[in-house]
Each structure stands twice: as structure tokens, then as C-alpha cells.
Length: 68
Image (cartoon, rainbow, N blue to C red; front, side, top):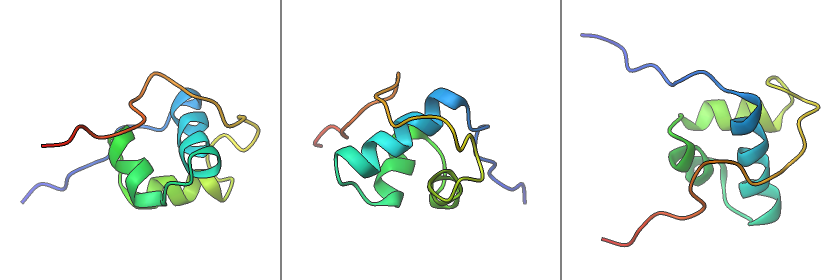
């Protein structure tokens, strides 16, 4: 069985994840789902493991999921 791998975290993605969590009040798994990564990646971004100097800013990713 193949593992599902999250796409690499980019500076724009890291800034957007920070924006969603700090500015919009989302929890990590919600922000991660919007950016197409797993919750662990969002945690790594928030703890400074990925692009620690990248500011929280809106990036080229959605800010909300569409209702079904």
C-alpha cells in the first residue's frame, strides 16, 4: 500500500496557514485541509519548523470550504 504524501510546504503556504490560524481563528486541521496538507504540517509551520520568518498573510489558497 502506498503512503499518501503531503505536498511540500512553500513560503506562501506557510504564511497562509499562519493567517488562517492566527487571524481567522481556525484550528490546525481546518487550515491544513484548506491548504491540502495534513495537520502535522500545519503544526510544524506554527511551531517554526517551516519558514519561521514568514509572516501571517493571505495566500493563493481558499479561506473557507464550500458548503455541500
